[in-house]
Amino acid sequence: MTIQSAATHPHDAGAPDRHAAPTKHADSASKRAVIAASTGNALEWYDFTVYALFAVYIGQNFFQNENPTVQLMASFLAFGLGYIARPLGALILGSYGDRKGRKAALSMTIMLMAVGTLLIAIAPPYAAIGVGAPLLIVCGRVLQGFSAGGEVGGATAFLIEHAPPEKRGLYASWLQASMGISNVLAALVATIVTRAFTPEQVGEWAWRIPFIFGLAIAPVGLWMRRALDETPHFKEEAARSAKSGETAKQPLLKVLRECPRQLITGLGMSVLWAAGPYALIIYLPIYVQKNMGFASSDAFTAALIGNFFLIGGCLLSGAISDRIGRRNMLRIGALLILVAAYPLLAWLDSVRTPTALIAVQSAMCGLVALFVGSAPAALSEIFPTAVRSSGMSLSYNTAVTILGGFAPALLTWISYSTGISHAPALYAMAAAVVALISISLLPAPSKV
Image (tube, rainbow, N blue to C red; front, side):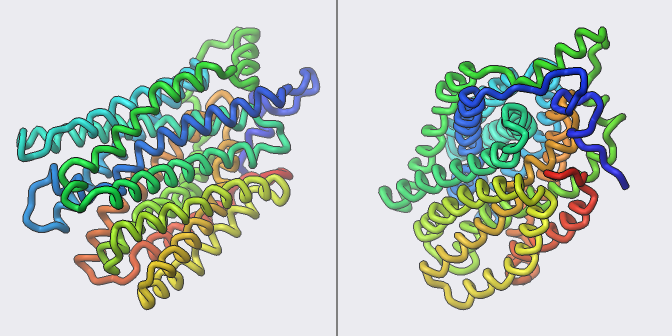
């Protein structure tokens, strides 16, 4: 099977053209793009992921049941419902970004995320308004999911199209590194809250503090992104279409009709991109509390430290992929997750010390980083400029909806109902197998 990459697509504004000057990338504009896009992305994903860290308290306040496990599962189901909205957000916001520009789409995702976070922060508990309480939580999660659905494709396209060709991997790796920054920020806030207040205070009201803090996304994100230039590739694609007199096509229909192989390959690769972070990073602090008896403060501290390895590992992975190729870097990351995830979790289960938890969480973050750090560039290079945002959003969010959003609820059910040990590791290992098959179908120019 031959996959046509963006580098060779005849309609890609970033492709070499004998009749056109190559796209110019000003260093100052490129650096501003990285800083602004990463800052906005980190704040947006902070709002999205802090829910998982406080799922236990949300379950206690909004989902009434005598069984704490059922409460937690209900809270995670609401977490997963946000992912049902992600494909819809990917379709609408991805298409919007391909038609109106990367800046417009990114600004819209920020405001939608802010509204969803506000709903969760101010929602009265079940004891106050009954069934209306969980409905508000679900509405907040759906808005967050819709927003996040357009974020990956739009932000990656923005970074890739501002990057010099020889640094696309490094620039795109800031997408995942900024998610690591958001995890550090969320874990830091969670650690402070759980250490500054009693468990009773956290359960009653202090759990809202991280969500209130997350509302900073609106003014900060909009200020950063309004100061940016549109990407040179998008400008060239728009100018080319206007000059040729082409009728504007719906990017979604175009990508479905012209890029089916790219979509399937991107979906397979995104399986591990989705499952790895959610099983081994986001869910792991909850898993070790419920299954291994760790205190929440120890779990959050380990998550805080581990995510520094995620940030550094993502940037390292992106930079190395610019030298050895995306496929080679992705294979290394997937293989390491396949062989190391289960032994690491089994060792932690046998030792059960805070030091071991920090070591294992850091190792898991490092393993995931090696794969996800180069994944954005690899996925973006499959699709031409005209449908890049739509294609990436659709591929990635389909995988995340199926395997990421409901992973915490599924893994909680597996752990408590089947007795299978170390379910998060097995989940990520299965995803690694699928990813390894898909990686072999990626395009093979010099830098992919």
